[in-house]
Length: 315
Length: 291
Image 1: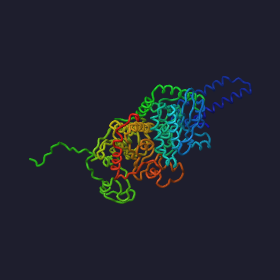
Image 2: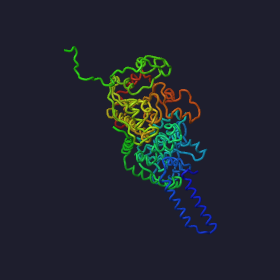
Image 3: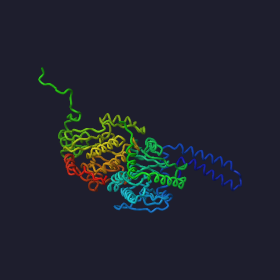
Image 4: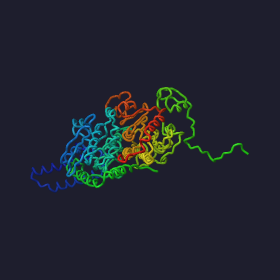
């Protein structure tokens, strides 16, 4: 599937392939034409991706080919054992987690999980976790703390599930508890927004010593669509809402709400999932090494101080 | 030669102590439509004398109901919103703030104060729904955080009275992070074993419920209050059917195990006092290993 702004590039790329094939069949030298076309593609790509609007970034963050949590885990971890269940209600398939070996490090990886086809999407509830998902996440984080294993979380959710049973089982309480408990975790915590970071559903696993965003992701209090429907009373103002919310990695970094941005290949993470995963792996290892130099009390104090400083007001 | 002589110059009564004349003499309950004297309604802690409907009230009324003789010191009264994202929808955010300040007479959607409740010291932060739907932005987060800090520093129990539609959209990411900020402060309060009572009033939803409102040592509510994460309209749209009666009411939450008890507003002060009396002496001595 192609996004609107991906189409002109894809057309040129198709043309390039055609040209090469045709040349091969007819034994003609088209190297100069190929070269100029390749140049053209490169320029167009650069132009397109350096001028993305905020809404286009949101679209990229939801790209159907974009790597999800399990894709990254498979690419990053040398070993991974998935752990299931919240020990109370059920196993939430929209929130996954488990113990992994990444290089020399043992880590607990936890993240929202989306599905790629209709069946998977339903199984994963579109990446919208229920309270038991957040409680499973907390159970695994406490386990990580017990065994002195650093925690990595991958954030990719359109929001916590707004359903009837979710309310009955205390969606708000589950998220609130996670936020509070994460501040007191004695082990290093690294949180990475890999796709969508929607509101409390994202924040419920996003309190860390390092909070990072991939380049083409968004993180805010509400999705542009919902914001549009509430403030403009229509779904048609999502582009404007995305602009107003300042929800991109660049915005969030500038406003000191995330610590750093992880660059993606030109065109987005889905163009080169392996390369993106490698970058993430390096960031995880470097961050753990860096954070391990501090004592747990220092990390907790800095974590609290960092979030405590967020907000703008006049005295 | 005058008969009476004023010894102190000027009028000394603070604004809070002035007895206000009610707007109208009569009050009609929005629930049962019963008409009663406004004074009777006020005397009944703003609950209906007929059906016990708890009318929505603000910080001014709650302070009056809880603090002895309505005596208290307000904390950080001047804090006011900025416009970090230059947010504009149908109206520019600073204009919206100004209009709301003018209309409500408030600086933002929460007020904090310290005072005595039946002689026991208590720090209260209370939200005001009439200020942009009680929405939580940087000011709300900061004022609550500072109130918790005050409570920690002076080892005084903390009462949070929530009444909010959730996070304030016009401060986007900053609003979201107030959930984290306030929860961080509560984690510190928790470690020092200072009691935190969270009173959820009608309505408490969204990011407020999903942070400080649900984090009390004691989560309590007034009867009939709407409390939830997602709003009823969103849930109805998600599941595609009508919601059962009483869904997301305080009674529903009590039944599902998320509240310690419901409290009638007329008994709020005495019940809170009893709770703190029982805890008294249990909270000041903190064993070192628990810090």
